[in-house]
Image 1 (cartoon, helix red, strand yellow):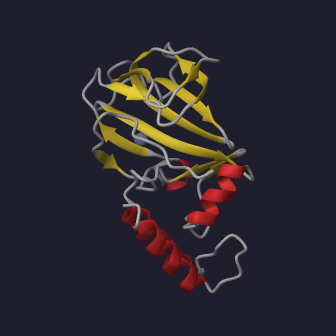
Image 2: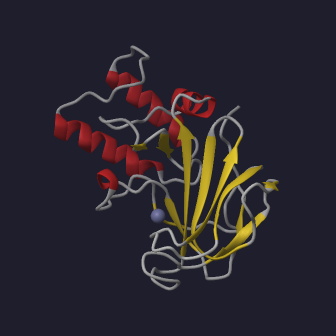
Amino acid sequence: MVIDFGRPLPYVHVTSGWWDDRSYRGGVHEGIDCRAAVGTPVLAVEGGRVVRAQKTLTGDPSGLWVGVEHPGGVQTRYMHLSRVDVDVGDRVPFGAVLGLSGRSGSSGMNSTTPHLHYDIRAREGGQAHQEYIARFAIPGPNGFPKHGEWVSLPAEPLTIVHSYEERVLERAAKHGLPVKGYGFGLSSTLFLAGAVLLARRYV
Ligand SMILES: [Zn+2]
């Protein structure tokens, strides 16, 4: 399998890319933000099973949100919604409406600029994770952002690849580290150059 998902909105306009600067979780954004007027249908980017359907506010900065698990150990998440239309356990096909976009989160229903936060996470060591790393492999000096068993992946093909490409180089230079592949044994420079070329095909 290859992660080759569709779009989470009818029209995608990315306002904040994967690995853009943030003040939390290691200083990087683990997803992409897409401009979306409140009430825009939010779509499943691939078929899967709903594993999270947060329909009430809990103080979680994510607000109302949906998580969908896809084959191969990968999840997609859709946050800051104004309405959630699915339940945990539902099987959803590609393109299914999961809910409506909004600006819920942090401290209430209207606390952020209207946008959809969309992210992809893979279970570390799972099939999707391994294939993704093999295909793109542009980790920073400390690898991809990771939390527990989940590794955050670029929301390819929607992510702004050059933003994290630059960050990888910047961080590597700052720490005086070569940019490592995951055990591919290639020279770091060649490896990164190849990975960047590969990634550019998907911009
Ligand atoms: Zn975001």
